Image 1 (cartoon, rainbow, N blue to C red):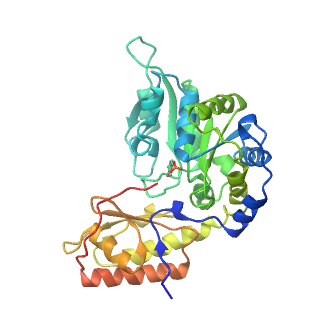
Image 2: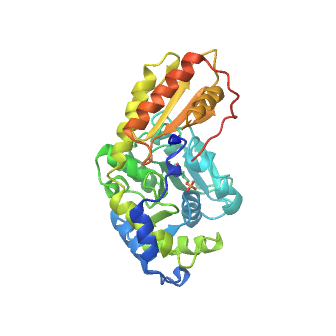
Image 3: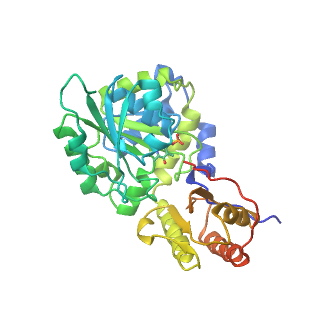
Length: 360
Ligand SMILES: *Cc1c(COP(=O)(O)O)cnc(C)c1O
């Protein structure tokens, strides 16, 4: 029997559950560009409800969700304030500038994933013909590059109040907002109460095969719907995939707690190993960043050695590596992963490895 591959590269590697496949097979469908797909309409209504907003829109990916949102808040030449380690700034091809002419104003991301709100206020442009108009503040929760840390309710509220007091809108990139809600034990709607728009992924920890949803007021969603069409995201019998999204938001949110427990177990196990450094405070959800501090083995060699034991994870640049727990990884798999680490580190193996990569 071949040994199971333990895939810790991302929570995007998950496959749809049996319930999802059944729901997909029997989903009632219609033409969603006409607004006539009952399954898409149901997913949108349920997600709007879950996030406490008026309306929602099903989109193809998190990148499309962020792009359609930003372009629905800002016109060409407008400015958005965002973190220099945010996914929108670092990992979406600069699409908001390339496709929408939206000028990015990156501010330093603090280790906890937040932006200094005083600095945000200082960065807002006065009305002057030399300057772009500052229209939007974007934040990310959980914060991916900060190790999946959660931004707490108080910060989310303060960010919204700061934006609104200065005539800006607040967009939340909530690709993993579900993880934050579970880890903080707070309703998703409460976390984004002050947000004007939110983008959430169905295809990460929740396990759906495709899709994200954006939410906001009806006006905003009307503009985003037009934007989705011009971006090529107006699809027809999309209920086939939206059906998996409904299962995702009804059956798969609470179990994220298991991924968090497994990430914690992995982090604590790694922290005990010689030459591995983990900031345990940073491990709050399903993401574990750790640093390799050894002369005899590189991150690429470590990941290549683990791959020989059917354990997959990513070097992410420098001495850092990242592992992400997900629904295909059990507690017993974490034990096997830690054994594989111990073996590779003991042998100081020099298997040739791939260059650093960063995945969603
Ligand atoms: C994964 C991710 C996205 C983008 O999602 P895709 O579906 O891969 O386009 C956006 N923001 C954050 C924080 C993410 O982790």
